[in-house]
Image (cartoon, rainbow, N blue to C red; front, side, top):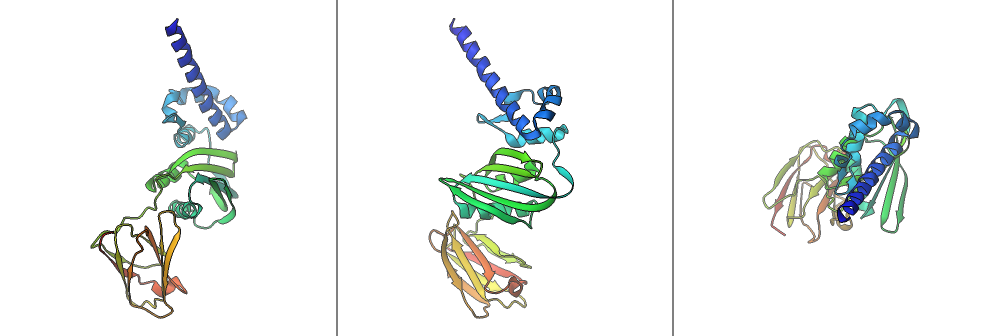
Length: 273
């Protein structure tokens, strides 16, 4: 009797797991396509248990399998206006900075913020951009993993509207931490430069070449809260600063234009926190 009950319970779990997986597939490709290709779906998604990660659906792998078997396409054929919504639980400032870095790494540079919303602990950020295809979930997921994040869910409202839930409990910017004695040569600065200063006490910036640097250096904690700003409305060749104790990141820029420091810096880190 006990064995029968255990067997029934296992069968119920398997049925529920299958239903959850197939339900997600139907959401992603649409009801019509799901019905038409149900036979193929059962074959390519077998065993269904391999599409779970710690009892959660592995949505990135599901998308990869759908694409590999031509069950979903991310190409529009022509430029269209696309919307992407990213949701998480955590610091909004840090999340937006992290997503900006991630989007840049997969080639999404020009986009507009449509909406940002905080609802209790959950934060969502919606952007729009013109593109010929939706984001490749493997590329997006891979870049997020480099930053300690993981896509936990993907939703498709339409061909041009996608939503991603992101776990950022172990999030960090994809920067090599400076240590005592670190020496960096940064050439051809075209955008603000970020440093991981979590492990160093003192940082020296030496301006190079034909720069006309008017320093702007900001320090942030692990959640991207602003801690301290150093700025000087005078052309400078060397700046020596002590990083705040809680500082994890530093942003290096110019008060007026990044063109003023296009030749870059030599940066030295000293001391241990």
